[in-house]
Amino acid sequence: MTVNQVVRPDFARTDVDVELVAETTVGAAEVLARLEKEPWPTGLMSFNALASTDGETSLVYTQWAEGAADPGLVRRVSGSDPVEYRLYRSGNRDNSAIPGCIVVVSVEFDGADPQRQRRWVDTVFDALASEKKPAPGGISGHFHVSTDGTRVLNYAEWTDEQSHRDALARSGRGTVGVSDEWRKVQEFPGVRGSGFRRYRMVRGLSLGLSAKESA
Image 1 (cartoon, rainbow, N blue to C red):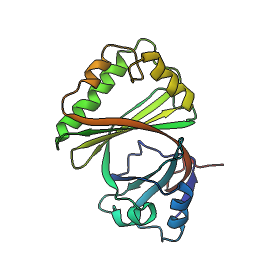
Image 2: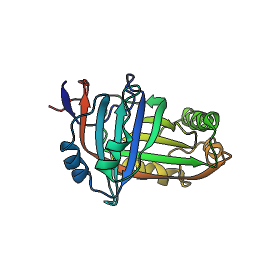
Image 3: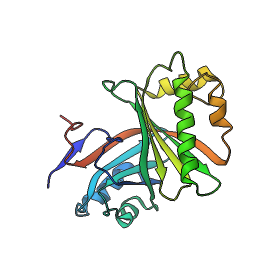
Image 4: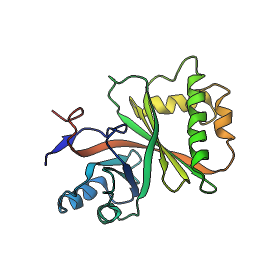
């Protein structure tokens, strides 16, 4: 078994069954220190720790093989209960760009409805496609839907934090685009709450993933 150091998560990795994700006030370095005391579980494909740019939270993003997800491990190292997700849809603008910031957008709905989760994501993609001049600095977006049907997480990679700030300022309404199609996203029925937080990658470990290994 070979565990590689990686510089960032491969959000669109195709051999993953589910992702367990936990937001925590435990520092990313401490999370990784706790992980080092644990044996690497069979079926854990990757483990990534991200630190928020405001210094308030860390995000633990883990990928698991089919039938192997271990919420207990994530809970022990993060101190928080993880949520189970599956990747639904990804979009990439520039695979060669190196992200300096990961914007994690979270959306919660007023009840379980897997079809509604996917419709919301599709509405976002329609809005993105309607942009004549996409915001500079946007690299990719990877939309995950919770397996309980109540949440969506988008991991949006940007070249840097300022590019994301500039995109929001350009629209003037809290979206990364200026097209009127974004109103459909903002007015989508059944959304209980939404928000985002900016993160930077601290460290990643991955089993059998070589494309993004560090030098």
